[in-house]
Length: 154
Image: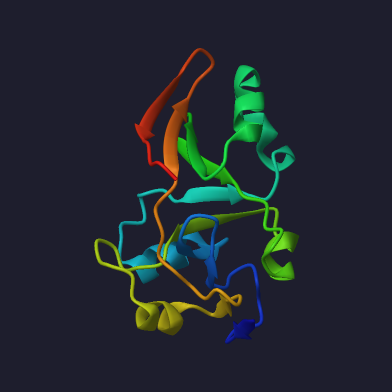
């Protein structure tokens, strides 16, 4: 089910269930920062819908590892990104090759469905609803090694 308050998808704040947890999605980082009440200088995770969309960022030796990773956020050159194919999600997300993402809560606070529904322009919800689940694994990559920063068992 998709509910809309806004007509423009690119500058809209979308509330959707990701593969790990519920989150806000947008191509406008300033809007996300103001909703989350966090500094503009703090970067967001960039979500790509395929490996091809972000291939230039990935060290060549780590591409096979990245292709097979599930529920994982990578940091390369101090920029965080994930690859999340939105096969089950709405056509809205499948058409966007990249977007910024953040957890759907106010900075430093717990998940609240009322807060999320108030701030989102578009809400994408399936039959399972919106649930706060575990965060993704966090791995820092470079050409020679990888370092686990957050490791969560699924």
